[in-house]
Length: 205
Image (tube, rainbow, N blue to C red):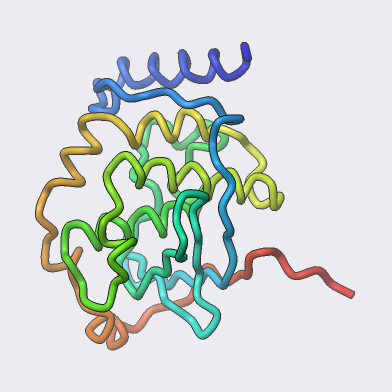
């Protein structure tokens, strides 16, 4: 599809101009080849300082069951920065750090699980590979688009970016103390809720 090809070329051109590490080889996947999983729950994010955000698990937790898994992924409290998208791309519709917020939250959680080895995580979630983590982000992004929660479809470019060698290097890097902060510790950090909504969106009667 020509419009997807032009998106890819545009992203690669920006990456080259910015000398961004995203230009490392990644694997392209077409939108129609991205699977469909089950996304639901409440997304709550608190602002706790400049460029510092905490995802808060609620009584109706955000969860996603990928098309290739039997159980859902349910993030616990953690620091999150949304999507790790280079600032040069932020003005491109669909490429802001929070354009696919829930997808980035769950993707961040998979990094926490892999890098920090938190307790009480089901084995099927703990054993998710780097390549599977990218596909999961893609499936959540697709669900957000189909729920009408994301209007600009840059999903193919985003999935390509999170499958690069640079991203894989981050996956294999040990977590920092902040990355691995426990939910108990994070509950003591006060902040202001800046995101709080449910999936699927609740309709007014």
